[in-house]
Image (cartoon, rainbow, N blue to C red; front, side, top):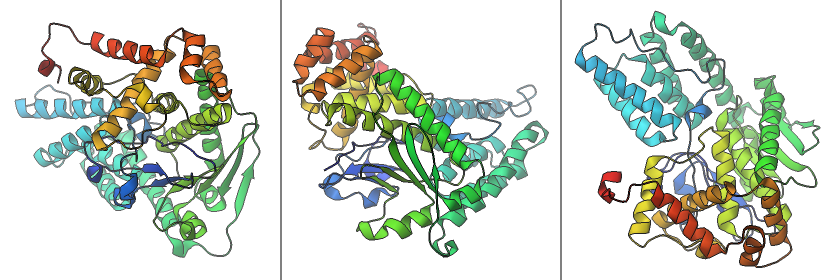
Length: 428
């Protein structure tokens, strides 16, 4: 039975019921399920259901990408309170750039309570709501932005109007009553992928095939560069609007999903896809290459860690936040670091906090290893695992290190990020 590994997407916050975004888990038949409601994750699978970070780059999908708002009216002549609010907005944008989306959302909402007519928070909250499929909320924020925006935001007003029009496409593709007649599929020829997308996606956006092919090509290039390997044959990818996906696959599951893997990637796509779909494809493609080259999922920490690094690169959120490193530093100090040897078979059996730590530990360890190997050496690692050799034998042959030694080096790297004479509580 085919297995695809847990995908880390979107937000990472303290407890599963509080999460918002997309969650994935692997069932007992080896099928990966993707859902957008945490209550739909089976109780027995919640330990492994995963989410990743979401960066600011994912939210932009038009000509204003990568820009920041001009400071509202500048700071000249502003009161102390107005300057404080401006700093809060800039801090929230910085949080979004680092993938600290939950904290940024809280700050942006608090700014609106203090200054309801400030346009910037409405803009960012609209993009976040749209990405989560909350179209009414996104529309409300966009309309509030248009009302509040002044002459400083002329270009952004045009972008907001385009996004309002695009929301209608998203609603239509989510409405099963809009489906008439049999589904029609468009096939796209590509040397590395067998791409099929629902015809309604192409109706919403004439540029749709070019967008998803660009994402897939980017994923192929990034995985080839970082893993040193690509699949020997094209990977199948099917893109659906939400209504078309439900009509095709609702009968397969006793719960609502937004994607799965059964040898091909099946995924619900927005009519106007942006960075969230790109990140998903990077992560999934990394897993597909790993499985084809190794014939399995071990060592799971290396597999998951490299997929997470690829996903982060798609969002342009390379590296680790101070809070991420600090959380691992605390676990080391408290003797709660989970050994890589324990994580090699799988992450099963880990409870909430430990499961989240396992993904982060694996990503840090993979990053440490990547910084000390070439793509050719990483390909050699995959070939060694694929030959059925023990993990330590493969690591020693390529790196001269065992799993335990890689583990120790990764922990030492984390500790080195914090001054030895600095109290642990000061790191928070």
